[in-house]
Image (cartoon, rainbow, N blue to C red; front, side, top):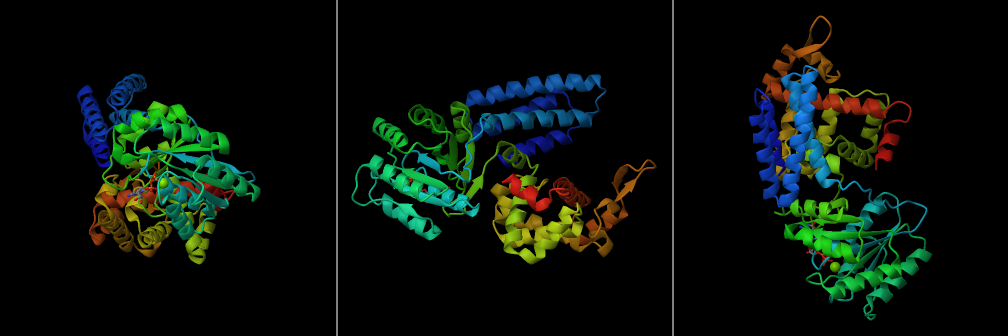
Length: 458
Ligand code: GDP
Ligand code: MG
């Protein structure tokens, strides 16, 4: 999906004029990409109408203000971006566990959706953020359910509760939550059973468990690979257990994810995480704006900063200097180069790479090799720079007019492109990235300091 949307937009931005035909072509490609990834037909046609109306209105305004083609393109791109965000954003805030109280989270969903796996991933996630977390197994339907949770929890070193003999899921849930409440855990996650289909027994059980444990948040776990069926399934669950958040699993496979987007719209419930693999770390935070940014190749600076913070924890010495520089609002190309090499050494490149602005979103689909290749080229570019260039903020690569406005790249940039075997366009991309990071640093720096700003972002 990302590759196609990204492709459609860049095709559009290359077109020489912004006329109806260009806009229609963009919309057509956009809509067929969405349909192909299983987004509900009605939603797609609504989106189309909205983008069209918005573009028309904005273009008229831009025209009045004597808009140039470049501005008009921005208008269209912004309309597309806004409407895609609206598509995955139901406009309701999900519950966020807070420290200092006991937060009970209950997971619901059909069998095989990924509840048990996701519950453990969630526990690990909150635990890492300083919230003492634990698990309760209220699945007595499936043989081996408790063993599975026990195994997961043990591996992740998360305390758990369950029973081999008790057959009433409501009783187990109540006992487990009661026990952990007394022990003042911050987050208690209740894993429930599923049936093969959405059946009335299952819904009755969910209601009874919900009444017994009084969850602060109920999460519906939705398997992305069920495609269009996601909408009906989520509607059926919503009626019996009024869940306040959705987690979409198995997005690492060939699933298209569009069904999940339709489920958000149908139940007006936000997605909070995506499951992207079987391992405990394969959980990604979901938020509408960064998601769409990445989809369109616009990057996710905030997500990137979070990763940089994780890296800082792994390598405190080297990163202390960086934190200091950022706090002072200084960020040179050399610093950006260092971040790029850290990213290279971190693994899971394709995920992180899509957070960098200007990296093609199709890379998620292209996989690790493509991401590694692209990152390597960026490092080659910095290899071809001289010391003073590396220590600069990047402006050294531009020529300026008499008023001091940058008018284009200069000979240095061409030399670097040639020396690194890349293109001027790629050099420009790298400079833009470094500049964006520097801008972010300046914003986050000053009074509060970079680290404080980062902590606030989680
Ligand atoms: P439950 O029946 O809803 O509790 O589902 P499970 O947690 O037992 O998961 C069912 C299967 O899906 C297991 O084999 C999991 O390893 C797998 N699974 C869960 N989440 C993901 C995911 O995000 N990606 C992939 N590839 N597999 C997953
Ligand atoms: Mg299970």
